[in-house]
Image (tube, rainbow, N blue to C red; front, top):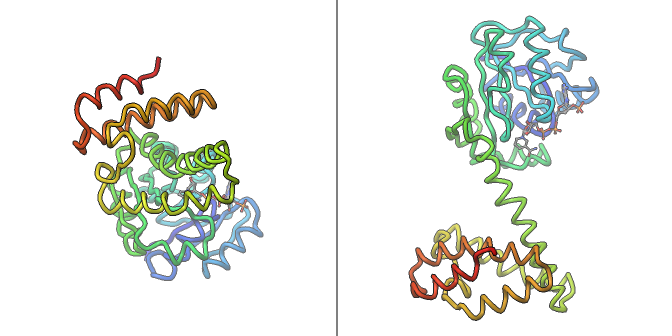
Length: 290
Ligand SMILES: NC(=O)c1ccc[n+]([C@@H]2O[C@H](COP(=O)([O-])OP(=O)(O)OC[C@H]3O[C@@H](n4cnc5c(N)ncnc54)[C@H](OP(=O)(O)O)[C@@H]3O)[C@@H](O)[C@H]2O)c1
């Protein structure tokens, strides 16, 4: 079994460390966190591994995971490369969705092969994440030699691996921000809009819950084209004009959002084919920004 050392063993490091140790994918070697106490706690959680106080105490390993926060990855990698620990063919990888594996260039210059594997999952609670990791999509890119080792390691604990193009890593990561973070923003805007209409927040949340859950269900059952309903799907120009004017008068920023999201709804409506082409053309003009 290959030995894995972990630099930065927090939510992600602990989850993967425990899964790989349990499934006998890797032997867990040294664990380096900012504090040795935190490293000891990570080793206890994993049930294996040796906490160390600094890179100078680390021992050689075939695989190194750098799972520090993103802004520490480059520096941690440079320290690892400078330590003299790396041997030709060792694998050094990180789990960031935002950074390319090329940020590990210092390890490559020291003879290692490098990669990045981004599990598309929220790892807020490692004990929970260990139970729910199975089925997680993992976007990977990097050196072939690194991926040949990392792909089966992630698949052995239930990860669904997929190749991503490092050139579009930022765009890839933006997709998750759009659908998760901005869905939250959109629901907040929905709540504020109901508040403006006179509902209290609690009622607004209760009103939104079934329609939002139902919409999400329809999207993943039938796709975005068939899931679209409402005035743009029907080509109802006068209703869209009234709503656009009402929301823009009250909150111009929300008005702009109504237009911009409406433009994508219009593309879906076109594909759906229910509304007439004349009404779609009129709607396109209405939704255009001045
Ligand atoms: N959390 C998620 O949902 C998620 C999802 C996908 C990918 N990721 C990626 O996974 C990576 C790790 O994220 P995370 O959420 O697991 O972070 P985290 O929970 O904040 O843990 C980071 C760990 O790194 C340690 N650390 C910080 N600076 C260090 C340094 N200079 N040297 C050594 N150790 C250091 C911290 O040690 P102390 O405990 O001593 O402070 C901590 O244990 C990031 O690249 C992130 O983008 C995260």
